[in-house]
Image (cartoon, rainbow, N blue to C red; front, side):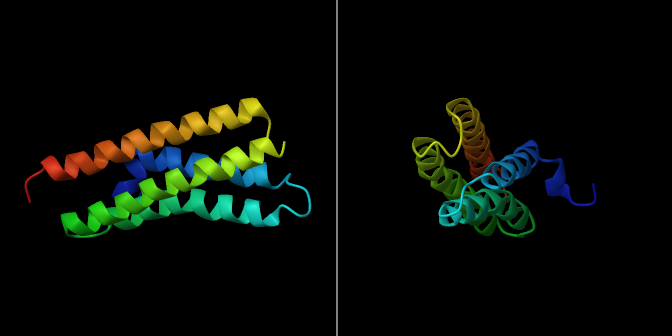
Length: 120
């Protein structure tokens, strides 16, 4: 792994989540492309913002990007809920993906708190 952020478990989980979403939305029927596109963008934004934040030099910049990643986690929740309500994903898959989001959100909160507790 060439980049430091690739060693972060939260980054690895975020990439795994985005991959699972990409696979799930491939099966969405015609007419639900809007939902699949938004889910793909939001899920990929989690990992992308972790990576970008890790590349920043100042704590405020890092905190900002990690916060954006956490916001993208929150964005995925209603999108997954709608996908489940429309039977685009199975209830067990919905539950698993939501559990993944909860874990990623907790890890991001820990990453942000760690920045706040760390000296310059």
